[in-house]
Length: 348
Image (tube, rainbow, N blue to C red):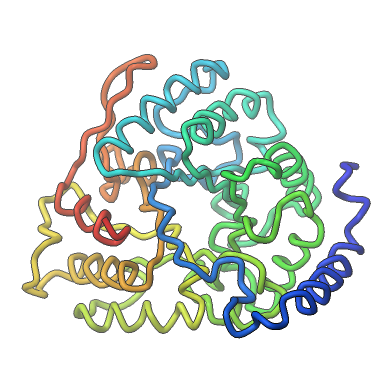
């Protein structure tokens, strides 16, 4: 049993006492401050998802594209630095969202995989560590709660003190009702107190689509929020229907939200600068990046590398093509107009 597991009942009490003390000390300033730690914009998050080729739903340790399960810690660091160099130089990225599962963290691979985390934080990148359910047939629910908590205890004990590492308890918790998911997420905050609330990203309900139930639950007032939005979630829409739907699902919590997944085809020559309004993917990308820019929201595009391969050997949403060998890895942008819209959403 980890040290985290001994103090679960006291965390909410400590939070309550700290809240009372802070309210007394800062009472004259109440009209000038926000109760949320993320009252300011979140657009300091400018980044990408780095995924396993074939997607992150796996019953094995996760090895993101470009890495090999035989790599050492130093090799992973060198490869990761090559990837991050190009993410930064081509589009100005400063954030990476990395997947974990229970098999990853409980295996020897974790000791090497940490090189991708450490390389990012050492260069000043933010890192979002997000849990993917352990297998595609898990139905959007945590497969093994004991293993899940053991995993997160290990991760938060190791990185809870690193201010550049953020923790997303679960990616797309669509197997839970709204009430069930909120209870699971609130229990996670209680259980894993090494992860500060202000660096926890709680996913919206469904496929992390809707923040309104989370935003309205006071148990999450101190956290950040994670939202996903894809054109395929909904019927074909024009620009304003995409934008209004996304804005509605943000609720009143855009200032605390990071768009941790969104994307569209980058391999078929779509012009994401076009205002013709004839393509559903273009309408969607223009709508969500305009909304993010206006709201001051950060994002991590899905994906930089990795993801579903289909019959072409790579994810057609992937922003980059990977070339090179060994630790000499190189990224090239698949669609410059798509990259431009991503930067636009970041406020660049």
